[in-house]
Image 1: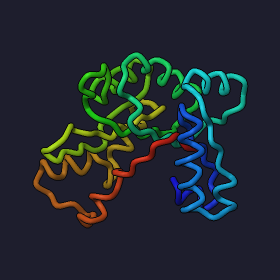
Image 2: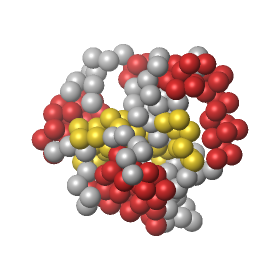
Image 3: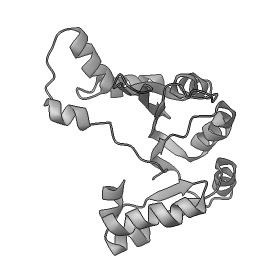
Image 4: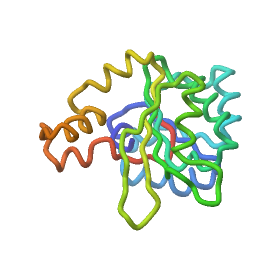
Length: 194
């Protein structure tokens, strides 16, 4: 995300807390981007319902890519987040959400968020499972606003997570070096971007 901003892409960061945006996100932008790149980014404070109102008013564009992290810990927020994705994710766009499979003591997690989104017409798969044996299992969900056929085409790409799993199950070696494979798709962003 920072690289995209540094290279001049239009990037929006969102958090419920304006303090987090001001004290953490803005500081990271200034430390890691050119001044021009940082100045081109928007910092959007507010709830998902507030962002949905901004989208309805035409104040937000359709995004080709949305990144989120630790956003699915409460099932009570799923509907607002699903409606926001419906409003903001461009046709053919993808969202990537990283989170725990299950948030103990909370009602959410990637295990319940994925089927919830499918009821809204999204194509959702687990792109990466991160297990260290010491903490909660984490997953990265790939969410497509596309037909199932288009999602299948994405899955057939040689570097797609499902193609890699299929090759491993069939005993084939990956054509991608291990050090690159382990880094691909494992990025984590705390904020939404376009």
